[in-house]
Image (cartoon, rainbow over all chains, first blue to last red):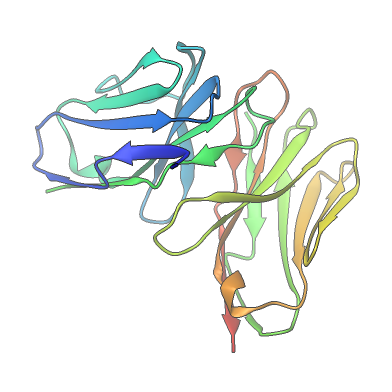
Length: 113
Length: 112
């Protein structure tokens, strides 16, 4: 009965590799997000999708490519991983956009060596 | 764009005392102010939010106040308990902007 789920929970990989993180929500929400939380705990929005359409791309390098196959899923693919990509990535969802309660997934801890 | 500043960055309180976290925002058009709690190793979770047409909101031991003129809002936790230990984030957004800006977080430690 998990509301927002992400896989994998941990991801350790080498520089230059390509990796994907998957997110699914079963809340029936129409908006999904990707956040990056760095080592200082700062939470920063990366992308937002509403009804499968990209509505926010917050100056993220184009090595990051989100994909939303349907309203319940939002995946994040990262090409040519760099050391600075190491962080915890959170997926979230809401119904109706920014002024609605956002439900976060458990996070994916990405470590690039 | 919106800039949200949060103070203090760390806060240690004795169990049973009150904790107050303050945030300021820069965009006078912001009208939605949520607070999230993140326990160690867990996901952020919304604990309370306030909209600009309200000056104060309470939920049991938690309250949020908003001063639109001064562009600041605060989280108040009364009768703190060990389970209140966490990182607390304030955030601000405005309708139709599709952008939620977070403060840098406050690490609250409740001493038993």
